[in-house]
Image (cartoon, rainbow, N blue to C red; front, side):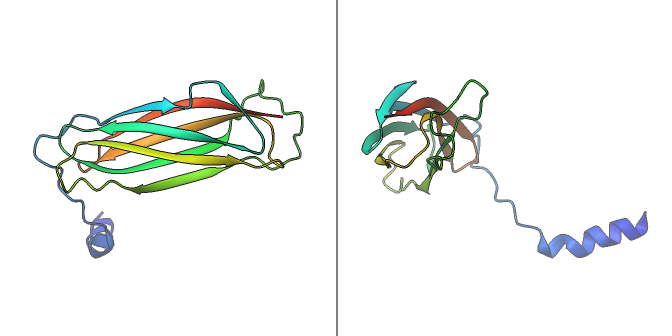
Length: 143
C-alpha cells in the first residue's frame, strides 16, 4: 500500500494541471446546424456548405467538425472499394470581444473517386469551462 502511494506521489509532476472552471459555468453551450439538412443528398464533384451557430452564456472556446462513413449494415455503397470521404476540422473561437455567439461556415468538397452512401457529420462545441455539446446530421453522397 505504501509503495503504491509513493508511486502516485512520484507521478504528480507528470500530471497535467487541471484549470478551474469559470465560477458557476455548468450550462452546456448550444450548437445548431443550419446547413446541411439531415439526410440531404449531394452529388460527387460538387461541394456543400456547412453552417452552424454556437452559443454559450459565459464564453465559447473551440469547435470541431468530423465527417465519416456512417457505419451501419443498412448503408450499402454501390462502389464499396472506393475510399470514404473523411473530414476533420477544428479551431479556436475568439470571443475576446465578449461575443458569446459564433457562426462557423465552410465548404466540403466531394471528389469523384469517393465512396457513395451515407456519412455522419458531427459538430462539437466547447466552452471555456469544459462543457460541450454535439449536433449531428446524415448526408448522402450520390452519383
